[in-house]
Image (cartoon, rainbow, N blue to C red; front, side, top):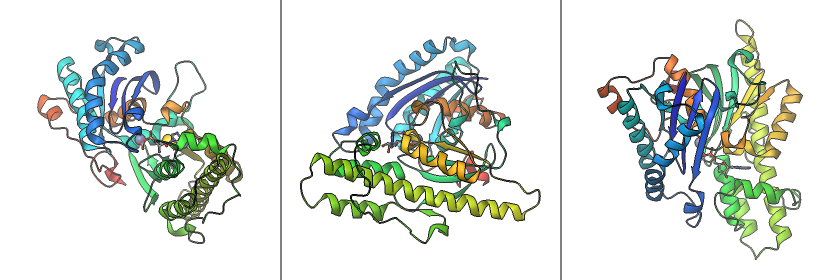
Length: 366
Ligand code: KG4
Ligand code: ZN
């Protein structure tokens, strides 16, 4: 089915057209520059920019898809999690389009989008991942600016959180570290670039939750505080900045990998004691930090060691916030009957800023 999807959950104005898993267009108008001088996303600025830019982004996505609006079967929109006043802009536009063009409207959870993003197909490649290639249950890792979650996917639409962060998300921690080094916002990608020139062992940072890897938690706030102490002492030379970037990235990834490894192994042990002996063999990774080459390398190494097939989205554009992943998740939400058809139903859709696996649609069944 063809879906026009909208995501305005944070600071990207994103619209896409998908046909099943195939991404026909994926337009993102980033607001990063607008927010950078404030060192983080300012909700009121985000709202205004979404309002100004969304009409153009919608027309561009439809134009680039080579479909007409009549050939589109449904509209999908992110209803959460995200910034309330930013989400509202995308939802209002989706309602307007659904009512004007008589299309059903599918409310989508942004996290389900990130989880399923490795299933997106490009228009050119034939070597694509399908759900038929995946062994259920499988594991999915979301590493973004707002979330760091390891999830068990029992089937599409049925999710259980295995591990989540008790404080900062990984992307948030990388952004804060980058800011302490004066690298601007968002800083994850810049930190990655500088870390390549740095020596990760020059500075010793404490590994979070060392010896407590089996507690089912990620944690980044202690690491951030330790990093603050290192960076706050004096003005830094270029080489010191490179080394600090490398140390922070190295320790934050080391923590992630340790916890993921422990959790997958204990999950395997638990599943094997049950009936049917299911084995975790597939591991999907999504979210902005999934575009980091060093993290990809470490996850692939972990995969090789423990017989896990690691799947990433096919492009960086599908890792960071985008609407193509919302269209993808939308098709399965549609199949589960989570669509709104009548005027009353469509108008009743509201944003759920704190939407989670335990609240609202569609992640409530875990
Ligand atoms: O998925 P995303 O666009 O937004 C949320 O849903 O939060 O993720 C944004 C996060 C930011 O923290 C950004 O610094 C981080 O992803 N990020 C990266 C890289 N590219 C984006 N972190 C590390 N390495 C990258 N190359
Ligand atoms: Zn996101």
